[in-house]
Amino acid sequence: MTAAGDAMLAPSITRRLIEQFARQRPVTPGTDRLAGLTERELEVLRHMARGLSNAEIAGRLFLGESTVKTHVGHILDKLGLRDRVQAVILAYEAGLILPGQVDGQ
Image (cartoon, rainbow, N blue to C red; front, side, top):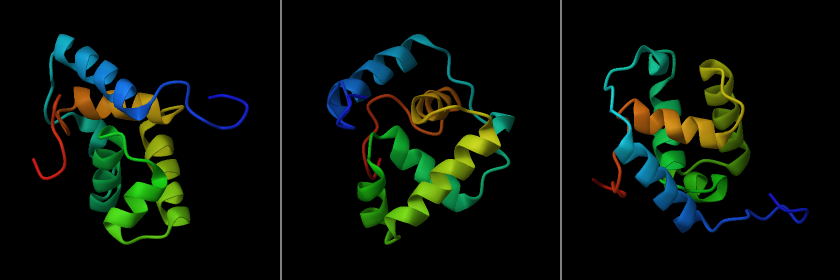
């Protein structure tokens, strides 16, 4: 992040980098690490993995942005992750989302 709070890479570039990384790693569907998440948290994680911001997730799920932030915090805590990037990588590794997958697919 920059001092202004902007990402150093555009979300589309970040998504392509993660997709490339995910293609190179074996997918392990059904990982136990996601078992402790609620259905809503899994839904938020899927949207995070697609590169959506908290505001975008809030709009799609008809939630307040602060509620999404709370869900993101719970996801990170439950999974023992330090940031969204690690959460996105785990989502790909667990097969929760597949490379190139977009909304509705």
